[in-house]
Each structure stands twice: as structure tokens, then as C-alpha cells.
Image 1 (tube, rainbow, N blue to C red):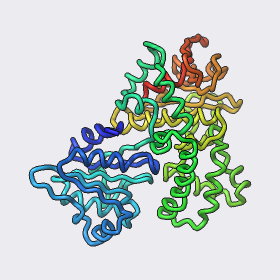
Image 2: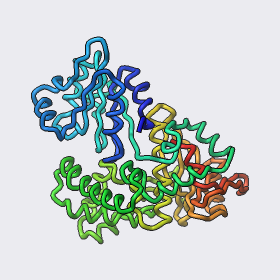
Image 3: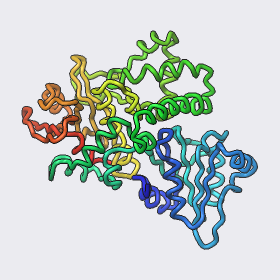
Length: 406
């Protein structure tokens, strides 16, 4: 692969402004490949992984010993999984303050690289943070992500039906998931083996290193329960009963799985929604290939595509984007609400094959303030407009809509 969708953003936004780049994302989503692609474009650089004994030895002695020296050029230092080191933020700050004028630094990790907001150890002003997601349809087809306005214009203005290779790419994503290894292998057996190994690595290695939790087998049981709950309200009480542990314990475990990019949770959008839910979230997996039920898997795929778009738009300065859902106490629901700068920007409903507008549009579009709703279906070749009261709803095929995102 010649590039990932973050490559130019890191070079232009972070390194171009004399800042470090922090890249976090799910394990095996391609962070190491991205780092090596960036290193390949430099005359001099170094890749340092915390799991390597020599890297740990030099880091403990003096982190500056890892920095490559290249007179007359600006080398790149990649620090992979360095968040596993004790007081790593303070060490990175010291390295950058001494060598940052002559060095680019990329820090990558499979856990969220939260940094101090206050105090003398703050890294604020020294870095830009980017979130790397697995493959999505646009990246597979084009590699060049679209801005919000470009994406909206492309979705709402159909120029032509999806080509055969676009439909095949979408079907492959739905079948194998978006993580590079199972997608590129295109084998059900390889995907199952890879998935089993990844879950074990996330819980038995990453979670152990990050949290020192002794109940790893119980967290594995929790991870086995989550795929069947995708798209539904996430009930901690129900999980508590199934696992026979305390409510706070389940909440803590879910928090760790979010930190490790195993799951993400959407909260209900409340503003102007009559009788809106207040707290209950919906959980989705970063690997939708784990979800067995077709409708839930399709909804999870849509959620991942939308989250990748809002994260990239936010990380690259297009605005403050976030992803929510809308639901009231009468159980009417719209699956996704993209919010830009604290205002609803686009409402999205996911349906496997329903070419009739969801009844929930009539309730939520006026309250959200969105004149247009988007209903995405798995059925190929569909693109129709419908009037819903004073608003309009576009029902369109996923292989056409998703090709206009990131």
C-alpha cells in the first residue's frame, strides 16, 4: 500500500507546523504500516517499539538516545506503543523540548493517548492528535478523504450508479470487516483466526499492560456478550446479571474496552428532542466483522464509517464534529446524528433493505432542525427522494453513500 488516508494530514498539519503527531487507534488498524510509510519518505529516520528490548534499554537510560541524527535534513522518530512506559508523557516532553527544533516525532499507540491538560507536565501546544481507523469504502476506492461540504454534495447529488468494483468492495467490507489483514486476505478462515488472535491480544496483552486487571477471563466473557448487543441500548444492569459482578465493575471494564478502541459508545442527542433519553448509550465494535446478525452488522459498519469521518474532520480542523443517536421515551429512534459545532448537521438511519422512509423521520427531523434525512440501505442501485412533511429524506444504497466519506 502506497498511502493511508492520514499520511498527508500528518505531514502537512503536524510536521508542517513544527508539531509532534500523536496517532492512536485500534490494534492492527495499520498504525505501524502508516509509520513505515512516513519513514520511507525520509532520508533518515528510526522506528522504536516499546516491545523491543533495545528500545526499552535506551529509553530508560535517556530517551534522546533514540533520536536519529541527520545533518542537513529533518529525520523522523517513531515511538510505537511508548505509552506503556512509566511517565512516558514527561519523557516525550523532555525529548521534544531539547530536540524538537531539528526532529519530527510520531507517537503511536493502540490505547487512547490522553495527555495532561494542566500542570508542568502538559504536552499541550506540542502535538496534534489523529485517530486512525480501519479501512472504509472511500479509502479502499480512492484514498483521498473528502471535506464535510464535499461529502454532503457528493451524497445528495447522484452522478451515476455505483460501479461493479465499488459494489464488490462494499460487499467485501461487510463480509470481512475493515481491518487490513482479514480484508486483504479475503478468506473466511483467515478472518476467523485473525479475529480470535486479536481479541486475545487486546485483552490478554493490551488490557493487562494498561490496567493490571486480574479478571481478564471475565473481561473476555464481556467481549463475547457485546456483539449480540450492537445497535441496542447498552444495559450495564443486564451485563451485570450475566457476568455476576458488580455494576461498577462492568462499567469499569467497558471503560477500559473503550480506552483500547475495542468498542465505542454513542450517547443520545438531547437538545430540542421532546422526551429524549438522557443517559443510555449504544455500543458498537470497531470490528463489525464480529457481529453475527446481518442487520446489526450493517448498522455497525455504517456507524464505523460515520465515526471515521467525524474523527477525521475534527482532527484536521474542519469543525468540531461528533456522532450521536436520537431516541425518545416512546422508543422512536434515528440511528445516527452527526453534530457539527454543537448543532445537528445530518441525521442518518440504517436499514438493510427498507426502501420506505422510517416513521421516525416525521418525529425527529423537525426537532433536530435538519431539512434532509439520509436513510442508508444495503440493497444496491437505489437512490430516491421522499417528502416527509416539510422535510425530505434520501434513501440510497450504502455502496454509493459511503464512497463519499473518508
